[in-house]
Length: 136
Length: 408
Image (cartoon, helix red, strand yellow):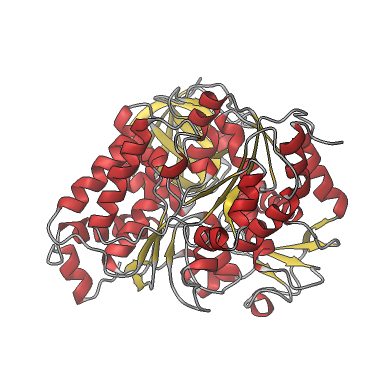
């Protein structure tokens, strides 16, 4: 089992399959939140479903809408299981705080390189640790 | 985080349940960023269109507003809403959208929020002062306020801006800290843009280079003092493409001299060809036009006046939508600008913003796909909503509205 220490995390402990890309994340810019898919044509995950997956992405992007949208997505249960980012911005943290959503960020390595797409991973917010439990 | 006696009392619920929620929320956010304490803010600005809120968000707001004593304690204003009620039918927005908007407005008003419905409050309501701490939403508002005015704000999403309105404070991290405001990368520009869409393209290019919230680009080489609308489009695009909240522009912005380390290596040099290539990348995707949009940010009175002059004596053949703030719209009406735009077939809306107004549903209802605009921010956002947007000058946008095609 491989572990990665992050600088900060919040939310509940979760396990799930990783959906990985060296790309950004913004609920407004990147998602069709009704269909539960990435919809931005330039996004590396375009067309893929994010529902129930732990998204492992590079940086928080876009504007301020994600702060509400995570809460709205959670209410409809069309939602990722958690969000893992190399670089966070305030909006993701504010949105996760409102939605009680699991998020972790800030690693000594590029986490999008270290986590294989499809791997079973665990986020432990209490210790701010990401664990790879099984490969893809 | 260190809390003073007043803040401890808020946490204990002595200022009401809404205020207790607010400070608990701020503690969760502040601890994530290791904020040492809270800083008092002068104003809060809330982004809260109902496409973002959804039914769940509106219900959450209504529950908060219903708690006894739930009132903001500092001037708290709003970003554009999801509709202009007077034009909703022409936009083919549905009744459930309007009903949700009315509920959100009622909840905000019950909380004491002023429904300004604008993303250009720095041009129209009350500009911040150098060094003043704010809790602003809308990335374009934050970047302009931080960079051009020298005030201090992080991106505050709707819930956090509302929390700041309720407590009068926000966690002290990020751009509230002087040490975070120093330039982290230097971009040289060898061509000072002329048109607004060129300023937007420049902002987009710098945003792509910067890439994340914690980068503070320093722009060197601008050879004149840009106007407020030029910096508005530059900043809005930089914030949109890069998630950037602060830039410095040598010889222009108030903190540039102190914040730019002369030994900072040059990350990139941007030329006129780079700006043209940025715009051409969008233009290659479409030739015919379904809708022409002037929005994002809302237009100033001067932008509207320019648009009116371009439309005088002409007639649009595809929808042309120009969106401004509720503060500007009456001036445009009184001075005849609205009438000139509408005489040419255009539609002047206020208090909304195109991408915050159920853009996907409007596209489906109206058959809109190919969209042209002078807003780089708008082209960056709308791809994910199913549009094929192109970035053109105001003049070429007007020509496209009159012919239905993009002139080569």
